[in-house]
Length: 154
Ligand code: ATP
Ligand code: MG
Image (cartoon, rainbow, N blue to C red; front, side, top):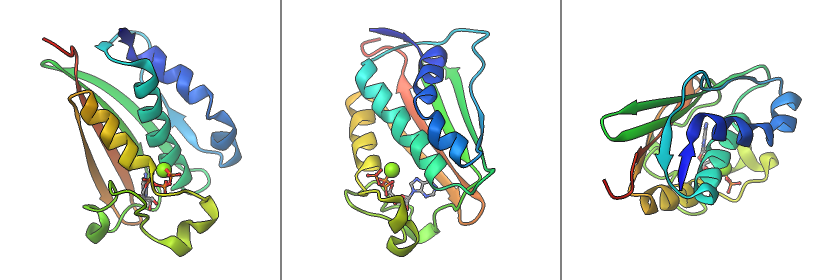
């Protein structure tokens, strides 16, 4: 189905407002002044976005910044989620998409995750014929970018 991704993201993020408020995170959403359409499955896209935004919030400090951007280029849609939280050490970057992998079990124990989120996200993105990339600097922050084809069968 065709999804207007800007409004879609806005609605998903509203379901996370409790954790966003609890940590006083300043959230910036893509502008809904224009429309960006993408062919995809709403349930899968919902899971992808929830997981990435939840991670950005969970691995941020109180009063942190989380920014979600949408960009269309050529036949692709780029969705990026950036935070200025704890970041990921370089030696862990290649492993975070593995099932059950968590960077620092002691540090993140209280957040109660299982380490499955990003493995699922990667699987869902690839089932959409897309890819995901990560840029992160420890103690500075993280940007996760999902690149999806605008149409499944162009
Ligand atoms: P869950 O299964 O509940 O999502 P999780 O968040 O620990 O558990 P993943 O979402 O797969 O698992 O993430 C794997 C690990 O990657 C996390 O434990 C965390 O160490 C690191 N990570 C993921 N996103 C971020 C981020 N935005 N900033 C810093 N570290 C991150
Ligand atoms: Mg997670």
